[in-house]
Image 1 (tube, rainbow, N blue to C red):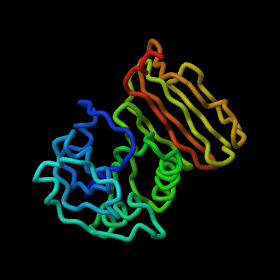
Image 2 (cartoon, rainbow, N blue to C red; image 1 turned 180 degrees about the horizontal axis):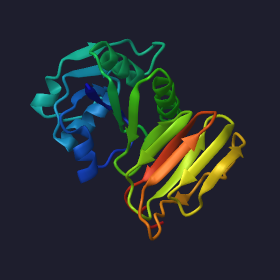
Image 3 (tube, rainbow, N blue to C red; image 1 turned 60 degrees about the vertical axis):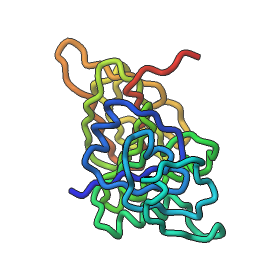
Length: 219
């Protein structure tokens, strides 16, 4: 498996879990995402974009990263171009770091939708901000290693049918979920006395698991 970490321009915090997830991967930065490389102690092999949002005072090793430059007026975002570069280099797994938050809600939405599209094409995709993690959910069954008490939501990108959730405070058994329903928002991993893990099965539709492996900040 060839894992590429794509450094995007959204929010990102460094955690031990994130360090493990990107360890040993090849790295490509999308424009302002180069700023995350410094925080994570990574040096990308490629820096992609129109370079309209380059962080100031980059260290010499990051400023010297080879660039693939595109015009500001283009048909794809810098993030999508960085992903395309990783696929050209043989990526079989993508970690989209900095996929959430940031100043552009439209870009954050695109990252979620793009993650689903890539998963439908057979790519192993993982989205993260360090504090939040996203995994595309397609028809089938998947298991997750989150700790007891982890907050999670299932974001439906279509009507869902046959959705089963076990290992949760509010389990579901082959339910139908209308598009736009809040039924699957704010659940919690709950193993019970017998232990176990969070398991999700989906009969039809497309969704994204959004989990918070770390406690949410106090409001």
